[in-house]
Image 1 (tube, helix red, strand yellow):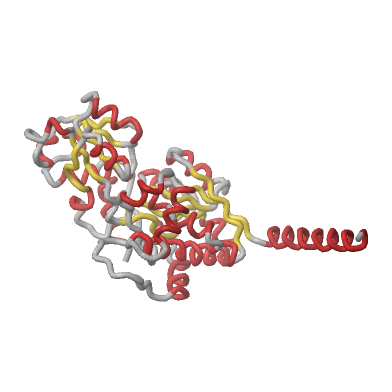
Image 2 (image 1 turned 180 degrees about the vertical axis):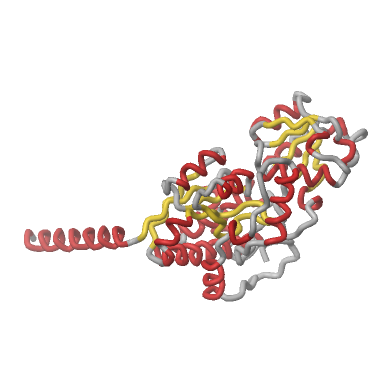
Length: 347
């Protein structure tokens, strides 16, 4: 018996040492990611072992930091990649010479980000032009929400200067609507659905309808280019594994056979923890090829430039690194939905 126990102990020790050596042999990547539902593919890839299968040790750090803090983390290589909205901060980081480029698209239209209006204003505010002079909530200065609100205003011949912009977190908007401190707010799912259910606001204008350049890029995955140049294989493997998560998300987005599995992963890892709510809310779209859309990127930076939020217009080669994405798509092949669906996006 003693001899058996000693042999078992030695076998276990060898197994643990082997596992430790395997873990040490993997390339470690620190990734910052806003834990929104549409950002779910990175957790899907993590939970389903896609990163492990290509020899990567990916640590995901949920964050809601300002663009300045994110820029500092990626500039100092504390994070090798970050995923979040395509804000003014990214363009300013490039302008400052910070080694960062867009690796792939993270969120595309339809995003279901909707301008919500106080119900008592429905008789007087019937179109975008009627928003002139009114207080409208926007989550942060320089955010992609500023672009979306600006595009909505343009449909009524207005600019951001024609409204009273009220900058506040999404979590404060419902109270501000209830107290009549604001007349409207650009909200994201599930907040837009929840305030509508409570009667605090009604859906007024969908930002997707106001943005003429389609498909629109809303969020991206950025990479530290100095690190990427030293670790090209790790970047290629990351993009390949990550895109597998994107495609799983898109299948579930369209109600595919993996829907229950993906809802469970999203509830455990994103900022929406209720599976029942995830089932009924609108999911932001993803491009199954994670493509970078030049026309949309140019439209966004043209808007930021017009508003004086960035200093200049950038060339595509200054902003994007597409070589890793092209290789991943060749390996993965065409994306084919396993179910019939008339739903827009994620295809």
